[in-house]
Each structure stands twice: as C-alpha cells, then as structure tokens.
Length: 243
Image (cartoon, rainbow, N blue to C red; front, side, top):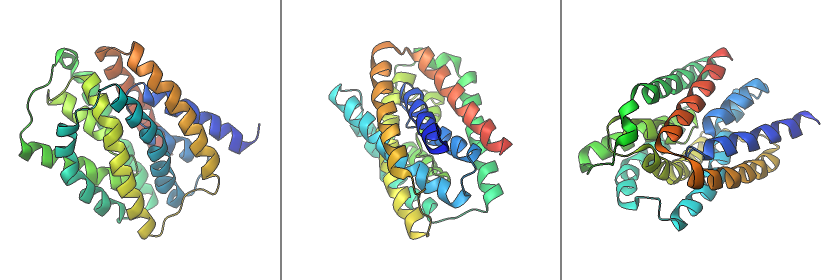
C-alpha cells in the first residue's frame, strides 16, 4: 500500500471515529497530515474541504432524524460565519499555527473530562447575546485553524450547560459544515490550496462519515459521546504539538 492509499485509509478511520461524537474530523485530519509531512500551507484548506464532505453527510443524516436544533444553531451561525471568513483570511507562521491549534484542542479536551455533570444536562434557553458571542469566538477559531468550529463549540455549550453531549453532537455537524465552507473561501482568497490528492481523501472521508453517523445515532450515550470527544481532541492536540 502506497503512502496515498495509507493516508486515505487513515482519513476514513478518522471520519468514522469523529462522526460517532458528531464531529467531522478536522482536528485529526490536521494531525494525520502533520505526520505525513504535508506542507503547512496545504493542511488548513485540505482539512476544511474534508470537513465539508464529512460534515455535509452527517448534517443530512441528523436532519432526517430530527436531531438538529435549527433555531439554536442559527443564533450561533449569525456571528460565526463572518468570523470564520475573517479567520480564514489570516495566515499564521507554521510553528505558531501548529502550537496554537494543539493548545486549543487540549484545552477543549480537558474541559470535557472536567464537566462530568454535563451528562445529565437537558439543555436550557440560550439568550441571543451569549449565543452570538460564542458563535463569533468559535467561528473565528474555525477559520483560523481550519478545524471547522465543532471542536470548539461542542465543548463550550456542554460546559455551559446549554445542551447535553448528544444535543451538542447534533449541533456540531451543521456548524462545522457552515463554518468550513466560509473558512475555505477565506483560505482560498488568502492563496492557500488543497493537497493534489484531495479527491481520493474526500471519498475516504465520506465513507468514514457514513459509517460513523450510523453508529452515533444507534449506540452512543451522553457519557460515551463526551469521553469520545475528549479522547479525540486530546489525541489530535498532542500530535500537533509533537509536530
């Protein structure tokens, strides 16, 4: 198996694992590309495009099952989308980009481990002001890092008691999709381009997302979803920092 095929298999496995926690895989896509020695300027646009594929499928799957709180999602996206576009226009120096992204992911993972009482949360009304602020911050980080924002939004809404882990997973996929589309436009304008083998990697991401979405809706509990999210974020953060 050549390097391209091996990475495609890894991407499919990442998309499967992340979909079980309502995520697209942007964090681990970045980690895998870092290990494969991708140029830093290709990592962010490639991760965003793979996010679009994986999150796009997950959004359709979740919508058909009534698992997305669209009114709440709209409050976050109202500020997240322009913020994601602005973040996408900023190109960080390679080492700063890897360190910043890694630290943010580890912080999000720690938050998931600490908030053990989140499993019993049933969600509560969210005022427009806090929702807009949360959307702006997580959207900007989405465009800046190429992760898509779900890795930042889900831990935040769980920690604040706004949703249960499973409800957060329902918000994450469409949130990632919207922010990734806008972020991808921003990075394209900034002059960054995807890896040449993007078609192969995109097909792999789609296959993984299809399998992971089916697992998530049938077998994942609040506690398992939260710990899966923590494990995923922690692993990706460590890999980026080691790079």
